[in-house]
Length: 337
Image (cartoon, rainbow, N blue to C red; front, top):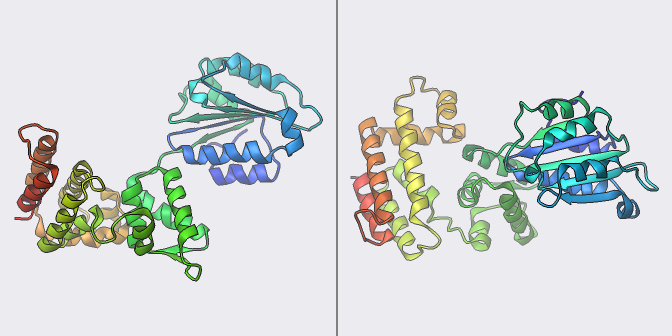
């Protein structure tokens, strides 16, 4: 029986050991690991000569389940296995038709479904049928607070290091799209000085265009330290570079900050571990929230959240025609006074 909750690493290890299952269902909101496994299956399971006759790549938008099943029933030619790789499998209907094939699957076929940006209903019979003989892998999207640690681990796997600020800058600028993050990190690795084994905020500023001093992370830091001068310098920079620093993103950062601080005030257990869990942040940053809470009490946090919502409406043209830069300037003044 297939293992439930199997990881990407475990699947890849088995494939490299040539331990194959008749069927794989790779599904989830995070396409990065699905793509890695799909690429490995397509590139490595068969030799170049074997691929010519024994690799079928189908697309869910173009085929029905009956077509997939017919392809899976074929026998390989001059090879021990054939691979049927179904990309965009989320577009295929009638997954229940697959259950009949799974009762007696073709043992010389490796059938792989790449079901991106969602999951099949786990209550469906076909899910259990696949689990009995094959692999069901769920690739869950990471949450924002997990991205910094993921970036640091990825860089470590490349036998390099990245400082905390640089990892935070990348996470803030690139979001939670792992493929995008990997692409940018790989570019940084190529462009770094040959005698350096570290990715720094200066390298990021030079090659990705993120200012190491004027960004939303530093603005949040200015709020948490109640540094009015620094906050004003940053928003002035934002005014001069509006395309690189959209107001809607800054508002989201400030909203999340004051929401987290309000949550901090109402969390009974103020231990580092408890606060990190409640706020969904890295324990490294708990001290910053403790300090910020001294400047912004619960009432101030609620008032700040209301202000941010008001200015979010204004930047969308509701009750104001002011430029985004002016709106941000007004908001920051009201939040810090």
